Image 1 (cartoon, helix red, strand yellow):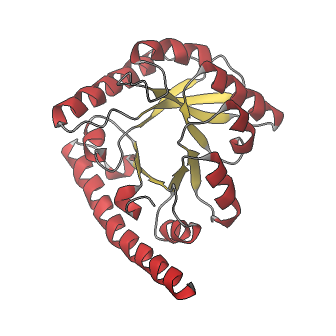
Image 2 (image 1 turned 90 degrees about the vertical axis):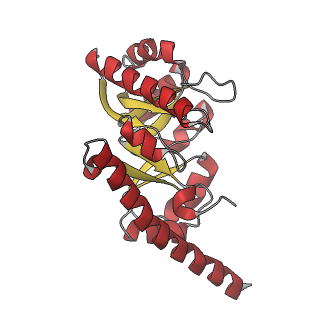
Image 3 (image 1 turned 135 degrees about the vertical axis):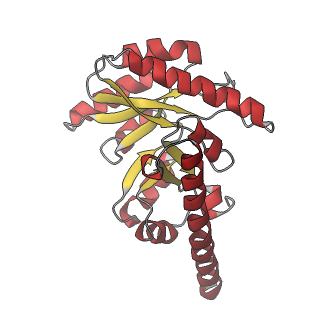
Length: 240
């Protein structure tokens, strides 16, 4: 059993090393095509189900940002992960906020005013200001949380008034489209929202980050302004 685990671990390391180089090259190429600098794009490694040893290898190899989707998994790995910029990128319930605030640099998936209020409340308790992104349900999918695009500006206005948080931008998971033209539509809409809300110069809202694009579509997302791309499968392989 020990030998089998070691073999699996070794395979995971080898796969990451090969994939990481390829992803960096693809980010650089996509940035150049969009007349952008690769340094302006944050590669956030989505580490759901990834062994802490593999995550630490990734960090030692150059990964600076990591993101977890599930609170329980985050907590189970917390003590085993070496220092890195850590984001929470999954669906967050209000009763779990206290377990996350103060342990991550940013919560990317703020999908309601109620959740933002709880984040502010728990942040103030520990004397912190929590950086957040507002989640936009750009495809208006029933299966996903987040504000509809026409609600996003008002949501930013309301949430910006909450003490204990600082809005740093927008996040979205567009529908899983098979046709490139459909993807383009959603990414264009997100870029416009990001620019329009930023132009309002709302207090406590600095539109610094547009987090969109994952393993299957991050190059297209970069073309349309993403500066955080959340990549898991393309780095670590298929989820277990």
